[in-house]
Image (cartoon, rainbow, N blue to C red):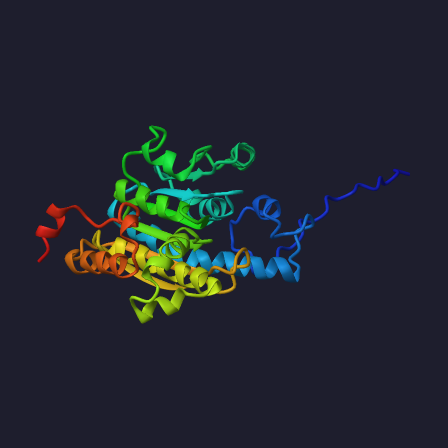
Length: 297
């Protein structure tokens, strides 16, 4: 009589939560702590995944817009950190492309750059690069193309957001997606000039108290950024990135180059700087060159 051996069948792959989209990298989602090691979603990670999709919904149409005009899409993510955003964008969009599309993550901390480089290699995300540069350094680096299609900067602290805007303008980016953070520079100038300006105008009451200086400075910073972008021909939309957990600063600025008239926003930019005594910040919040203004229709 033949002995029947007990042959163990391989355990079936765990069924993924319905929130996970077809084709998403399970290994990546585990690395980002969206999925637990056994492929589950807890309440916290479910909220995190919802945030990821929410942000992707803003960026995906911009990627499609570039793709409608050309084959490859180049995207630079400034202040990338652990490259959370870059990896999600690559997994959901870039992974399925058969062209020269590329994501560049810019981050000053070399250990994070090394870790992201290793993870991209392990996942087979060939068209991702990570560079240990500041935002300002990346503007002149020969490791990046002369032009870039889309620039993102999520919670790039203080003036790093302005450097990202400067980078995007010099790289002739078609789209920018910015979530500014910790805007302290304008507030420091408001404080410095408070003594000489106080009493000249009742408007200075807006930033007389230190807490108001900080909050008003933050608000003015983003207003100046929007005017600067409009002064370079961009169409600007400002909204809220609802539920994004990394910061209380959830103002989302999306800019798309439309070659719009530049004269009026340029004049308004200069007027706001002058009214608030911030003329010395004109080099940071700069308008288009004079020849561009003369071509306004």
